Length: 107
Image 1: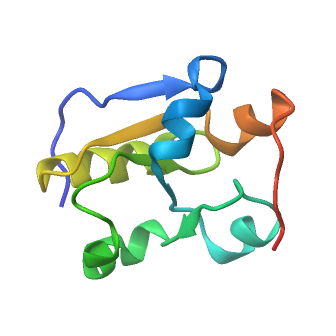
Image 2: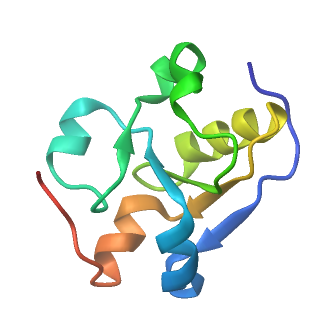
């Protein structure tokens, strides 16, 4: 499913509101992690389901992939880019997001 190549990434401090507004935010964590808090407006597709549910990821929109610290979302980013999507990994994941004081949704 995945092959080794450089993974496009952005850190929370460099994530501007424009990118966040235009991106399809894809959270690939497990359901219990999602339930504890996620980025408002994100779509939840656990990494283990991404291959089967990739049709839910838009072809014409940047995809910001998120997990706990960036490992799983890095794999998702690599996979989506191989399929022709424009995906970017959120380096540091939700840990960095929350540490920087960004808002978290539990809805």
